[in-house]
Amino acid sequence: MKVSVIIPCYNERSVIKDLLDALLNQSFPVDDMEVIVADGMSTDGTREIINKFAANHPELPVKLVDNWKRTIPSALNRALEKAQGEFIVRLDAHSNPDQEYIKKSIQALEEEKGSNIGGVLAIKPSVDTWIARSIAVAAGHPLGVGDARYRIGSRAREVDTVAYGAYRADLITEIGPYDESLLANEDYEFNVRIRKAGGTIWLDPSVQADYLARATLGALASQYWRYGFWKLKMLLRYPETFRWRQISGLFVLSWIVLGLLSVWVRFARWLLALEAVIYLVPLLISGVIAAIRRKDFRYLLGVPAAIATMHFSWGAGFLWSLVTSAAAKLSGRE
Image (cartoon, rainbow, N blue to C red):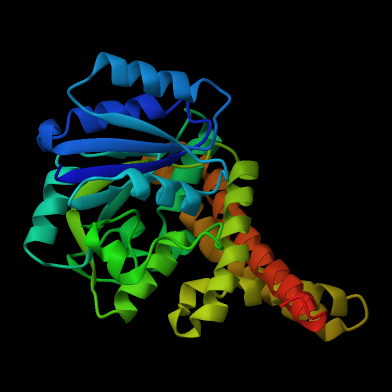
């Protein structure tokens, strides 16, 4: 077996069939592939869909692995334990890889371009609503995700992290599996260890996949709160990995502090008003540009709302992680 595709999954009945179909239709030979879905004991019929697909397409081996912890790093590790391939390709249930995805990923690894190869994600709406379309635009916008090259596109280059990734299976022996103490940012932490071991993270824009963004602002807020919360845990371990795009915590803190001070201090009110104007102007510009390009005035509201949701949710999660970590340390629990 040459390639093992590992996929964490939980209650993904609306998307898992599309992903399996995309893997079946890869240009890479299915005889050299296996697919391992680590499922968190789904209750929505996802498991039945996977089993039916496996029965209907014996030419592509599909294994269903139980993930009782229902966390992403646990799912990845349970899948790795069953993997028999020389190469590992990590995907997500919300992803839809281009037909050449696996072929080009393995080719880049065999050409030794990097230790972990990733591509560029095209962010797509998961449902056909105006807010879902706005969220998809925001999730691929530099104002929303900063310099995350795998979301905004780039030339082929060495980067700090990639989405998903493809690597040789023996890399796990060298640096260890995914960190199950992190409930988010497990890919980034994995890539940090690769770089610390002397490896390279390589972005190849020819490796492409669609990614289905969250459908509602509430779901988006939950996602980014979780990202922010667990990012602090990462930075406490690896402070040298801090990037400017991760200043949302300080940004949210400034709004809280100035908001409280403005009750008593007039100057704080002016500072808060100034900060709001400086922040809102580029948000509104992003909405105007999206509305003009897509000829839909609803992007005027939707894109700024989605970007602001990402910023404030990430920052709030980061701050809450800071507070709880400090409290745990003072109480002697850390």
